[in-house]
Image 1 (cartoon, rainbow, N blue to C red):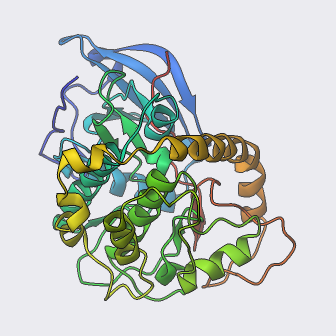
Image 2: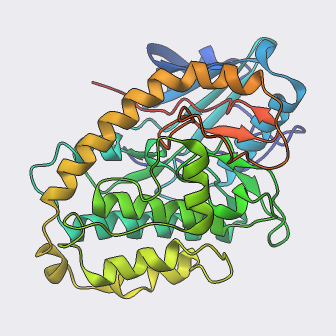
Length: 369
């Protein structure tokens, strides 16, 4: 399914206009694909073209004024995204009760789910995925958009046939950065969040590079670099940049791949590569022939364990976590001093740490067979 760009014009609210006033005039509603705290996602079909898509129907009555503005901002950002590896916004509708966001549907599911099903996997395949990720980030950053919640759940596959056609989804925490290092909100997903966000200092687009470095580590090693059952210890590891290439899991990974990770997971963002720099790294430019010789079968086995744990804990903690957060008093910085062993692990849902706010569009547009 090809990508269709969203309409370029905007209405008085900064949102893309719809052809008709009613979603039902343009689309036929299909089966439910998923639901979240604010939205339900359905499959839908364009009546004029027959093109299948996904529609997120958001209940406006559940949105605070801040949530409503956040939704409008996300839609405005998605409207401007014109890249083959970003989930496209096709149409937007609203009535008194609901918002309707018609988005590109991803029939292939999550990237990591596909990898763990593979019978063979090598460094070339991992490199190709990383190259696509950084090319997409380079585009986003060139438009002054910082995603701020890169993680495996937000890397989707367009269809079931092509392993490499990744789509970056869920721009619920994305923000336009009008001046360098001008962002301050502490948000993201533990385990993937950059140290400067945890430290509560102003930051910029390189927080995405850090998160992409974590994903690169997992794609090559099969497990996350900063994992700890206790949230406080994990945050301290992240702020120190404390990770290792453990033996024997990393013995078969090329030195060039490890070097790229070292240049991505740099605590000082000024010394960290940017997306364009990552694309020029020696590992990204290594010949296909050499990388195909680097078998990552052991990585797949490790990733199966990580993926199962990620799925289980994400589902089990989603509701409990949001209740805890909404009932707690949040300070300007993340608290990394807890020692009860019950902190949120890296596979938890996205958290907007300041202010406390659900990601209102967190339900991804994935269709399951």
